[in-house]
Image (cartoon, rainbow, N blue to C red; front, top):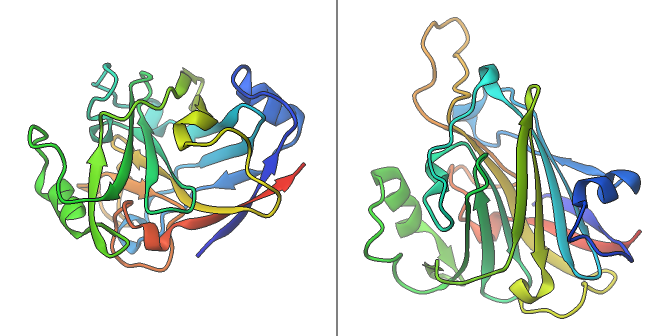
Length: 240
């Protein structure tokens, strides 16, 4: 299990998140391709995360593959995981974790995941997605995804030069809190990236890899899926 320290800053983070994290030299968290099937890929993705007085602030910088990126969904609560996508899963200590998934057009899919039985009946999933849902568990029970949950998270995103930049702000109320974590408090979670257009070529081959690439902070499992809370990284909060 990977371990990271998350700074607790005595400021608000709802506005100008990236500038505030940059001004205070918040350390970056670089994503990796943890599963062998994605080893040929080399896209650079880093996230900067800190707690503020009003919520959790995350700034992302992701390399754009081959000067293009795919994003078809534009509506909130849409299937952004079918696009080039960034994700944050955060678990504050109970059996629930919160998901924030978004694409380069700023469409945000936010939800809470808790012990249950199924995803909504009107969600038609691919075989791979269905496999992920069927096998995913929390507290040794199947995971149910509550997509009706409203977090109030705010996202701003842009593509400039060869990079995709995003700011994500999550108010404490979205995580059922009223104040920042205490010093030494530890949560678990992961930061993920799905690169659809960045299908790197296999060594010695002219053919591109046929599947999207998964970057993550998950470790200790050979199963290439993000919804594995038992293998999330640890985030320990420290004054900064």
